[in-house]
Length: 203
Image 1: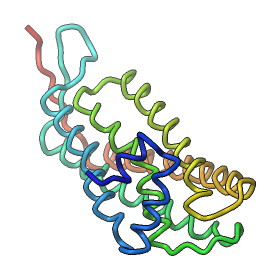
Image 2: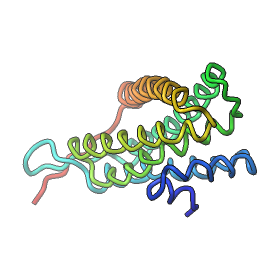
Image 3: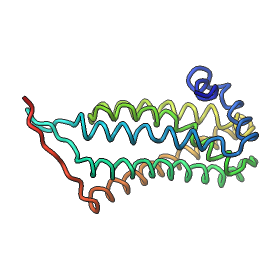
């Protein structure tokens, strides 16, 4: 586990300098972080929906067939990777307004590290529960927002006022991208791939 990854949760104010140095030395350093951590929600959700299941009625557990769960999790993985990449491109595009000159790789890397709480929140996919998912996603969103507002000014080398405005702009775009791309993914899976549910009596 890399030092910047640990610092994001222990000393987030110092982690961004290390991440920027790594991205300057190795422009695609973020790829391993993104591609590996994006597997966490996909793999955990597959296990949770095929083995654990969820309850909609007493004495009954609902699960997905392995084929349907695989389709869902593959779509989720692609959605996460594409979403982070789009956010990086938006960050790069908006940087022109704020006198920052990051590379595309640096912007995608920043987006990937900022999304780390969401990746780790995917562990709770092992136990599918609507209220647990809402609570965990709210916590992940709060910490990702904190990382964004603390990290973007440092990562881009901007003054506090510019960094705050830049971060707020990225946050707004990020929320729009997150909602849009997740809704499209769910509609595609539900309407076109026709998920197969298995109802298993309990006891």
